[in-house]
Image (cartoon, rainbow over all chains, first blue to last red; front, side, top):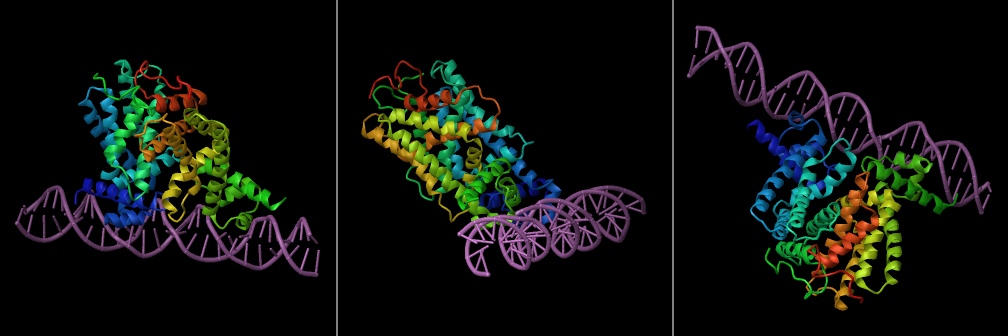
Length: 204
Length: 204
DNA sequence: AAAACATGAATGAGCGTTCATTTATTCCGC
DNA sequence: GCGGAATAAATGAACGCTCATTCATGTTTT
């Protein structure tokens, strides 16, 4: 087995174990067993327990960023871009449920308690939304009075909270597609009564 | 010192310590020292470490619910209610910053890893939003096609993510009031270009 | 003087990390 | 291509430390 394979195997096993038990309840020996390596082998590839988590964040979020950026670059309408972002963020939840659970729960902590670690990848991900909002403002499609730091967080937070619901509860009354559509729709058109404004009704 | 005083003292000390170190990094002895009691005394008032956290959740969220419900009951316009909810949720962040940090970080974990514990108080809090949305729909102020489970999460998530930003970063370019206004405004009117729709422009 | 409350040192289980040892792979002279 | 030395990779038992929890003892209240 090649070196790189074992690195990957440990990361993937860590995702499985951490999603089930969380960082502090997960044992190194759990991860080792899941990866079918000896406890000590982990330390040939990672400095310590935290290092596994950080590497996991960087590598996996990195992949997601590349993927989402590609999808968005194919599109010109910022309103559509928001829909695409929403859809793919939520799709992640069912396609990579275990990873999603780890990111949901552990990312928040680590931002707070591993003070030295700035999660630049995560910031980069959320800033994809800022980019879209900014573009929409330039194109005169979105309101100019949006506070960029607030609006991006609001949109991302709406998605994030929705995916938390998805992960926690076993049954879902809506499809991913419906949820993504609804969220981007709420942002684009508001929740006010229809007739006054209609999302995507005018072509850009 | 009365019994109830010590219970409160331990809870308040736990909030301080947990906000600084997080549940797993916090020692019982840290909490005891902060509360100026002996380690063993903690166990006269709580069954174990988890019990402190759960009690903290229940009691503190309970207080918040009572407070917010009061404020909202004074209001009739669901649009104003959303603004009030947003404002007071965010105000909590600066008024009870340490509590906010604990809720932000630990609540998520505990929902996942303390399987037996259903955080009913938290659900009750988020459901205040559902209530408002429902009322708005009945009054024909909000769109009828809102998916209730999605819309409430989206609104709450937007607030929650914004408050996380508030807690993590030391400097804030906006006031709490601006942020709350902007978020409720985004939900009520959308982020589309103005002129087509205007929040709260028609009296209820 | 009994009951209730409080103390904090002692206990012991749990687990991240290390490292002496084993196993696999590569290298090289012939 | 073969034997076998050198290097690399992997192993997992043992170490050492960290706490959550307990409880024998002390203090305060009734």
